[in-house]
Length: 114
Image 1 (cartoon, rainbow, N blue to C red):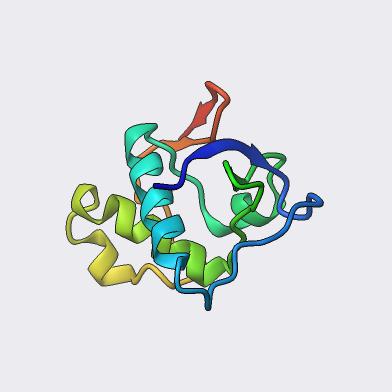
Image 2 (cartoon, rainbow, N blue to C red; image 1 turned 45 degrees about the vertical axis):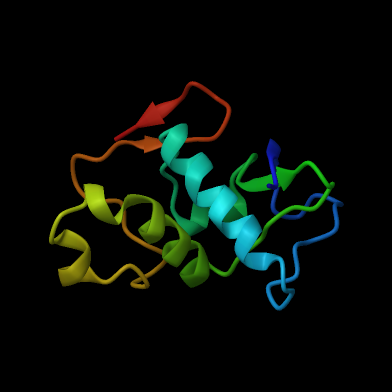
């Protein structure tokens, strides 16, 4: 199983996980489990423009995604906690809007907003 070891800038100089690779599903499932375990909740803008928005795995690869794809990943992690709100808005509507009352929580840092 893959392991997330850090969070880096989207543009940091690390090789990227290939979305078309046979092992991509393992990276994504590891990320979804990590998001849930650490209660990380950020949108696509934070993923692409935040100081530490891209997960770095133990093999030295970072996972970067379009805002919509990041929204799909966040939806997989949080769909059970969002109730009907995601069905009305759609997770791909600008990178998964964080539902009202659900605080934004950044990786690694102990920083929340909401």
